[in-house]
Image 1 (tube, helix red, strand yellow):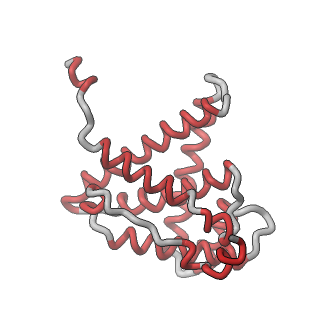
Image 2 (tube, helix red, strand yellow):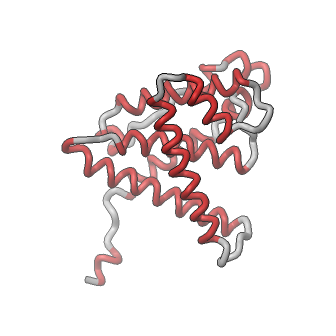
Image 3 (tube, helix red, strand yellow):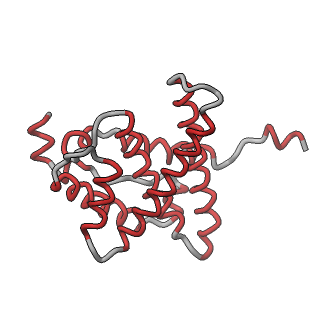
Length: 191
């Protein structure tokens, strides 16, 4: 019984790779240069949550024989996100008594955004996604075209992820579209 504590999770490398891909993509400079996302801890958190939500949304839609594997991956990636946020809060000097309250708020933010983005992606009104992204990821006064550009990116990313079989997630073959190709003139002008 005690040996279960020392057993390695066979999914751990896959979950680490998926979460690493999400984090790496959330740090792509084009988001901060051309999509109106502020290059602040909050802006980086919002992009991380956006990409995590897109992956969890796709894995949550799996059905049939893939469903169990997809749920394990989704929960594993979310758990890694929580551990990462907990570690980051502690590194930033947040006190031990405050960390659980802050973590609850971060979890609520994730699930709230996952729901909002999922509904907006399913909506017939394309402005709904742009409005949700402007509210959650971009600072006040961000031009409408930046929100629309980010919404277009999210639609392409969601479609790409939706087209992937769960086996590709398990094989770590997940990639996101390059945001710089969706706003090349803006990125080149600001680089």
